Image (tube, rainbow, N blue to C red; front, top):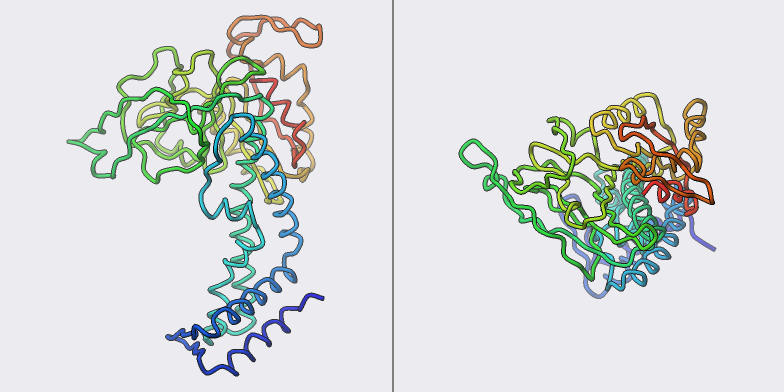
Length: 389
């Protein structure tokens, strides 16, 4: 039988009282080597008991995400023949063992309680706030990663590429009142899929480019667009470039996935520099554990959809069917025919056949909407997006 938090905390404080090798005060923390292992085991059990009592429901959701992520990661490694998927350490730890990573986040509140800096009421408030905010952040990043890997799987990816971009300090990027020029490099085939980003970038390049066996062309993904500080002198003349508003990166936020497709690998290298951004084929926005979606959220989505003019529209993916009213109705507008009509290959002037039905040509500037899709972990729901690509 699991201990409740009070029982676990009392065992911890009794252990501290009975061992003079442990000294935990306002400005001093000393734990003798001989008792360190047992102390930290009791410390861990106390924080784990807090999670079980306060947010066991969220922990269960995190464990579901973990299982689904690990399943699709294994499939992608096999499909691409790569060594590993490289994530930020805290995201990787969370996806591999969510309970252990969340327990770590409660370390400071519990030490503050033991030191007498806060009382139990304050501890519970602080620990709960830390737990919820940290879990929401890691869940969001993990869910975004699951979506990208699942799209790669559904696209039947067989090759992986990435564009390397030279990294500079801020002062190196600004030269004599103008931004430094940074040539765009050609994509190179890789044996490791990386989701890591540098804090400062000269130009924004694709995170990953895959070759899709299903559609026989290349698809690139860019997650967490960072403000570019340099200029690319060798931009492709075949790409449609849009002016980059000064607040555009802020509007995009951290949940946005930009998706591009092309028959030519090199056309997908550059996403943006300090002046322009490539018009995306698709914008995907993700919502992990957020339980509401209001008119302001929709207004922001519409704003950057208007600014960046994605050819195939914007898709807002929810972890669960939580939308109500008009927002839910909007999600129901998605269907196979609508998806097919907006296919990128049709915009470029070719007909398409789907289940024996011929779909006619559609002008390049076809009106597109923001589509809301409750996906959860039902991979088949993402087929709506795969059809577009």
